[in-house]
Image (cartoon, rainbow, N blue to C red; front, side, top):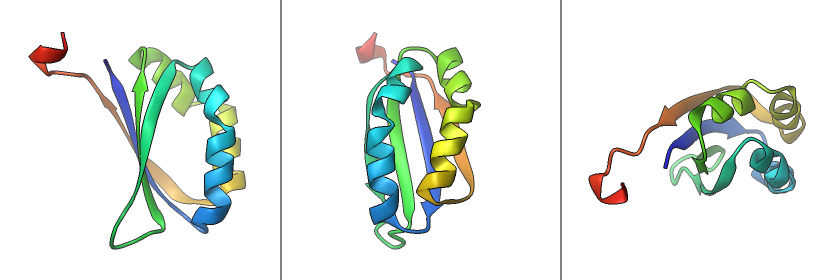
Length: 94
Protein backbone atom coordinates (compact mmCIF):
# COMPACT_ATOMS: atom_id res chain seq x y z
CA UNK A 1 0.00 0.00 0.00
CA UNK A 2 1.33 3.49 -0.79
CA UNK A 3 2.02 5.97 1.97
CA UNK A 4 2.29 9.70 2.44
CA UNK A 5 4.92 11.04 4.84
CA UNK A 6 4.56 14.62 6.10
CA UNK A 7 6.88 16.49 8.45
CA UNK A 8 6.35 20.01 9.72
CA UNK A 9 6.68 22.22 12.78
CA UNK A 10 3.79 23.68 14.76
CA UNK A 11 3.48 26.73 16.99
CA UNK A 12 1.58 24.81 19.65
CA UNK A 13 0.97 21.06 19.57
CA UNK A 14 -2.05 21.34 21.90
CA UNK A 15 -3.66 23.71 19.39
CA UNK A 16 -2.60 21.67 16.35
CA UNK A 17 -3.75 18.20 17.50
CA UNK A 18 -7.53 18.78 17.72
CA UNK A 19 -7.57 20.41 14.29
CA UNK A 20 -5.60 17.47 12.89
CA UNK A 21 -8.02 15.01 14.50
CA UNK A 22 -11.06 16.90 13.17
CA UNK A 23 -9.59 16.66 9.67
CA UNK A 24 -9.77 12.83 9.57
CA UNK A 25 -12.86 12.66 7.34
CA UNK A 26 -11.34 15.17 4.92
CA UNK A 27 -8.23 12.99 4.61
CA UNK A 28 -10.47 9.96 4.03
CA UNK A 29 -12.15 11.74 1.11
CA UNK A 30 -8.74 11.70 -0.57
CA UNK A 31 -8.10 8.02 0.13
CA UNK A 32 -6.34 8.06 3.48
CA UNK A 33 -7.10 4.83 5.30
CA UNK A 34 -5.38 5.85 8.54
CA UNK A 35 -1.99 6.70 9.82
CA UNK A 36 0.38 7.44 12.65
CA UNK A 37 1.52 10.67 14.29
CA UNK A 38 4.97 11.09 15.81
CA UNK A 39 6.67 13.96 17.64
CA UNK A 40 10.38 14.53 17.44
CA UNK A 41 11.89 13.48 20.78
CA UNK A 42 14.39 16.36 20.63
CA UNK A 43 12.00 18.98 19.22
CA UNK A 44 8.37 18.42 20.30
CA UNK A 45 7.21 21.18 17.95
CA UNK A 46 8.18 18.95 15.01
CA UNK A 47 5.44 16.52 13.98
CA UNK A 48 5.78 13.61 11.55
CA UNK A 49 2.74 11.86 10.09
CA UNK A 50 2.72 8.63 8.10
CA UNK A 51 -0.56 7.99 6.29
CA UNK A 52 -1.68 4.88 4.46
CA UNK A 53 -3.30 5.97 1.20
CA UNK A 54 -5.27 4.12 -1.44
CA UNK A 55 -3.47 5.80 -4.31
CA UNK A 56 -0.71 8.33 -4.75
CA UNK A 57 -2.60 10.45 -7.29
CA UNK A 58 -5.34 11.11 -4.74
CA UNK A 59 -2.68 11.79 -2.10
CA UNK A 60 -1.15 14.38 -4.42
CA UNK A 61 -4.58 15.98 -4.85
CA UNK A 62 -4.97 16.08 -1.07
CA UNK A 63 -1.59 17.77 -0.62
CA UNK A 64 -2.56 20.44 -3.15
CA UNK A 65 -6.05 21.03 -1.76
CA UNK A 66 -7.34 24.30 -0.35
CA UNK A 67 -8.86 22.36 2.55
CA UNK A 68 -5.46 21.12 3.68
CA UNK A 69 -3.86 24.54 3.25
CA UNK A 70 -6.61 26.16 5.33
CA UNK A 71 -6.41 23.51 8.07
CA UNK A 72 -2.64 23.88 8.30
CA UNK A 73 -2.92 27.65 8.60
CA UNK A 74 -5.57 27.49 11.33
CA UNK A 75 -3.61 24.78 13.20
CA UNK A 76 -0.47 26.91 13.38
CA UNK A 77 1.82 24.96 11.04
CA UNK A 78 5.10 26.83 10.72
CA UNK A 79 6.88 27.06 7.38
CA UNK A 80 6.55 24.68 4.46
CA UNK A 81 6.08 20.97 5.25
CA UNK A 82 8.31 18.22 3.91
CA UNK A 83 6.08 15.86 1.91
CA UNK A 84 7.20 12.49 0.57
CA UNK A 85 5.10 10.04 -1.46
CA UNK A 86 6.13 6.42 -0.78
CA UNK A 87 5.52 3.15 -2.62
CA UNK A 88 5.52 -0.09 -0.66
CA UNK A 89 8.44 -2.13 -1.93
CA UNK A 90 8.18 -4.96 0.61
CA UNK A 91 7.69 -8.18 -1.39
CA UNK A 92 5.93 -9.77 1.60
CA UNK A 93 3.21 -7.09 1.39
CA UNK A 94 2.29 -7.99 -2.19
